[in-house]
Structures are given as structure tokens and as C-alpha cells.
Length: 247
Image 1 (tube, rainbow, N blue to C red):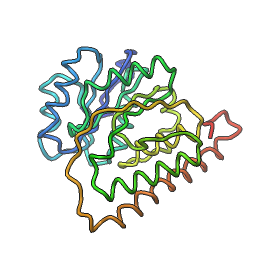
Image 2: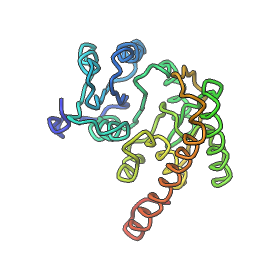
Image 3: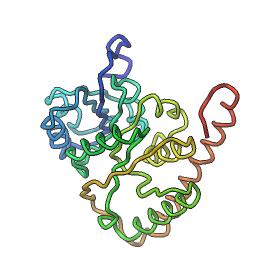
Image 4: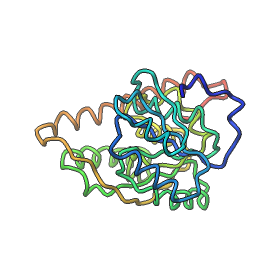
């Protein structure tokens, strides 16, 4: 199904929508979806197939979840934006398709989300699963964010999170179309003074890169986040006085 094929009349509200962005995840997509179906608590599961060259989308369809396909590869963040746009739920749950997170942890995020009155709850990963260069970059950035916003930011770019649809929709135009979507959504919420909660979750990391890439990875990691902050600040100035985003 292409995004244009979804009629607005189909968007009858449901409590939650789980959105899974996927690109060439044939080895794991079945397991991820099956884990969600086993929970029997999510009325809408959407897989956004970002123009995979393997059977990712077909395997998802076999499990009778909604599949939306991009005709060309547009990026991780763009896939999430498509899913949010066509989701029926007032509560948006995002989950990666690579089986690094356990679907069973979502209920703990939802419990915190509801009990704490949060605008977003982020699943916090144990940095012990990451290679040194990623630990260093993530640790540095989260420390800087904590200093700037005067609150703990234990995981800025986790791919497992629960969000209020009405809140995240305000920022979609300035969020990244790439892998920085999750980090930029955290930054948008922080800059907008929204209430964010954090819950520790299980995580099985994918194989990392060579340590030869430490410097390049760290520099790009930090640079991308400052670019997001700049973009959000510009957007806030443009919308000021028109009832736009609070930053």
C-alpha cells in the first residue's frame, strides 16, 4: 500500500498505534511483529517499508498488519513520519524492525506514560552493549544535553519510545528524515519544555563498526545534533506570534 492510497476516512481513532520503520529487515521483521501480536494489546501495527529490496514488506503482510510502502528509499525518519501521518492512534509507539528491542517492554513504557502524564517516554538502553566509540559519543552528548536543559537525558536517540500524537505532529516538519529522527524528537521535546520520562529497557545491539572510525563517528554524531537544535530554533522564530511551537 502506498501512502496516497490511504483514505482519510480510514483514520478512525484507536488508543495506540505501533509504527515500525523497516528497510531490508527480512531476517527479523517476523519476530518483531509476532512479539507485538503475542501481547494482544495493540489495535494498530503499521510497518513502513522504506523501499526494501528484500521480502520485508511481504513478510509483514503475511502477518496481517498494515504495510505502507515508499516507492523510493526516503530514510528512517521519513518512514516514521509516514507512519505517524496515517496512524489512527492518539498514542504513537515507535519500535525498530531489527529485533534489538523487546516488544514486551512497551507495556512498561505505557504504564509510565499514563501514570506520569508524560508527552513522551523513552526506552533507555544500557550503554554496555555499545562499542567504545559509540559509548563515548553518546555519553558526551547526553552529558552536554543534561547541562543545557538541567535535567537527566539518559538516552537521546533510543528507537523505542511512546509519544502523544498531538505533540509530535507539531514538530514533524523540522524533524530529521534520517536516523537522527529519534534524537531530534528528543531535542524538540526538550526545547519545547514538554514532559519526558525514561524507562530502562532490554537491548540487544547490532554489531558495531571498527574502532578506527571513533573520531569520525563522534564528530558526525555531535554535529548532527547541533544542526537539529539550529533548525528547531529557526522554526520556532518563524512560528512565533502565530501560535506555533514553544521552544
